[in-house]
Structure formats: C-alpha cells, structure tokens
Length: 291
Image: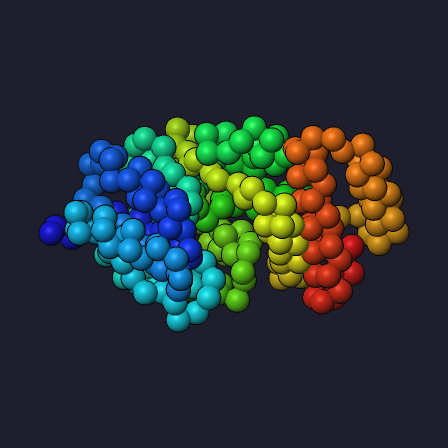
C-alpha cells in the first residue's frame, strides 16, 4: 500500500456499540489523499476489538493498535500517532461520526495552519433534551472559556501536523480531561496560529445517563482548576467568581432544582452540580482558591 499522507487516529475504550458506524463514516468518504485509520484501543473489554478486526479484514486501511499500557485518551492518542505514517494527523472519537468530506476539508485546513479544529453537530446523534441541556461550544468557531483565554478544540475534532504534535511532545498523559485544551494552548504558545475549518464538522454524541453527565462535568470542573493553575501566569483569567460569591451560585442552583420539570432542565442541573463540585474539589486540591 502507498504510504498514507493522512492518518486518522481514533482512541477507544469499550465503544463496541458505536465504533462501526464511526469507522464506516470515514471509509465512505472520498479523499484526494491516501489515508489510514489507526484505532488505538485503550484496553477495551467489550466487543470493540472484534468489531474493528472484522472491518479491518475487509479494508486494510484500518490498523488496530494496542494502546492499553497507560489509561486515558491522551495516552491512546499519543500511541496512535506513534503508529501513524501520515504527515497530517486527524483525531476523532470512536462514538462520534465525521461529516461528508471531513477528511478532505480538514486536510485543506492543515495546508494553511499547523493545527485546526472544526465544528460540532450536537443534534444528529442525540435526543432533543440532550442537545437542549448542553451548549455547543464549537458551533461555528473554536471553543473557549468565559472569560476567554486561548481558543481550543475538543480532541475529537482536531487536526495537526505531525511535526507540530512532536514539537510539544504530544498530549499530556497526566490529564484525564481538558488534555485537548492544554494541547492546543501549548501549540499556540510556541507562536503557532490555530485555524477553524468552517465547512467540516463532527457529529458529537452526548452521554444519556445522569451519572455519566455528573462524572464528566465533575472531572471538567476539577481539571479546569488544574489548568488554571498551570496557565494563570500566561494570562488565563479566573472562570468563577471569588469565594465570597460561591453561596449565591449554590442558592441559584437550589432555586432551579425546585422548578425543574423537564429532562433537559434536570440534565442541566446534574451537569451544573458536577461542575461546581469539581471546581470546589479542584480549587482545594490544586490550591487555586477559586471556588
């Protein structure tokens, strides 16, 4: 097979229910570049590997890599890049699906920028209450915090040149979440400009269980305190009000709890609860004192 110019790296862990649709959405695309798909399995215990091997037998562009040595999507992505041969690297998560011509459009973006992100479609793969309860942070632009710092993209909608990835030593494997924000920021702090590919998007899948939503947001809240500690000296502003305003925030949460009637409202409250508890824990653990 001709050496691929483009490598799609897909980290996965127990995504047997979704990974076939994700891979087929990639294989069906037309792309002017020779491409390969590196599935970096982070130690799945379900049918993920069997599903991938079945598709691999029919299409040699798929490669299954054992990335179980260290847990976490960051480690799996780094392992996937080590196995990849392309000079252009695209990342996508195993439970999401790429839009038509996503590969070609992202590759075109990498001809102009060393790192690019694209938009999220949060409607197609989710029920209406899920989409209603979660703000789409990459709807027409790169993600950012409020107040803003440097822009970033979720890792499942990210493209980068191999040299750029290696120049920052890949993803920080100590971060279980927000490793994508940290990655994009470290690239930009080298002086590189990050681009946004307007006409490409990823169909993004939200969790359905309240427990999953809570755990996701609790981790995000905790690790936001950690990245704030890392990047405050680069000008990253505090995202929360000082400790004196914390009680007001909790009072608003309890008022909303009494009025919650719909699944979307309850999901929003669960996510807010996870975020606030995560922020409190992270602020104490990492000594940012930013509750």
